[in-house]
Length: 179
Image (cartoon, rainbow, N blue to C red; front, side, top):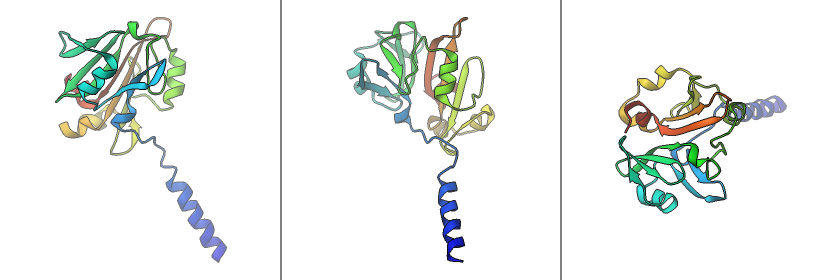
């Protein structure tokens, strides 16, 4: 009888550890320099801290700031709400999970290891309340503005040959409202 109880407890512990999701926070969504992984920026980081890494940005027509080496950042209330990597970032910046401009789609899908919510662009939606990637966009759309700031969208565009040509990392509010 003791053995059965022990086995049951072990199974409960194992199954509770297999909740099936990667727990992500804003600090997990960002970019880093390829040649110096300590030089990174993440969602929620202050503009001053981001510009310590990126240098001084120049305001663009879309309420974002463009930086050298193909990085564009949007800020909300002085903190990063979205990061975009363009062609000029190739060889300089990569995402924290090591996806950069020029990465093949198959490799992106393998690194992400989750079902995408949309195919064009290849987009992943992460819901912090369920601690999982969701494939139904509506599950995130019905959230309040504050809840949208706690959810993430990871979006990858590809050229005709299947290479990443644009990467956008943002909170759901920035993806939905552009702020």
